[in-house]
Length: 121
Image (cartoon, rainbow, N blue to C red; front, side, top):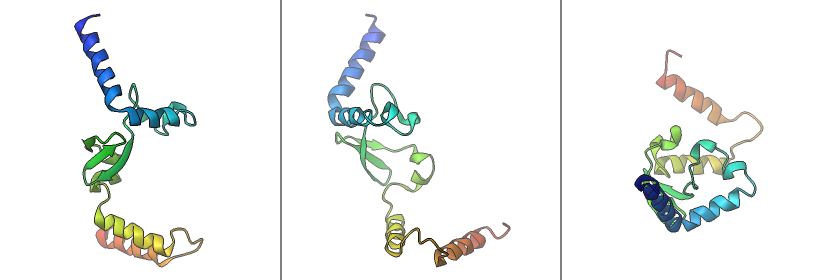
C-alpha cells in the first residue's frame, strides 16, 4: 500500500476508534433512514459525528469531542447554539402556544418589527 493510502487508512481507523458512540448512532439511524440522516449534505465516510449538544459557537458529539461550529447551520445558527435571548423567546412563545389555529397578537408584533426595521418594504 502506498504511503498516502496507508495514512488515510490509519486516519479512518483512528476516527472509528475514537468515535464509537457516533458510529452506533449512525448505524441505528440507517435502520430507519436512507443514509442514516435526513440531509445527505451532512454525511461523510465512514460516518458523521453525532452531535448531542451545542453552546455558543461550539458543538459536542456523542463521544465527548468538542468542535468549533464554523458552519452556523447555514442560517440561524449564526447566533450560536442555545443563545440565552433566543432560548428565552422560545420558552415564552411555547408557554403561550405556538400554533393556536387562529390569529394571534404575535403576528402583528412580528409585522410591526419588520416594518420598523425595514420601513421601505
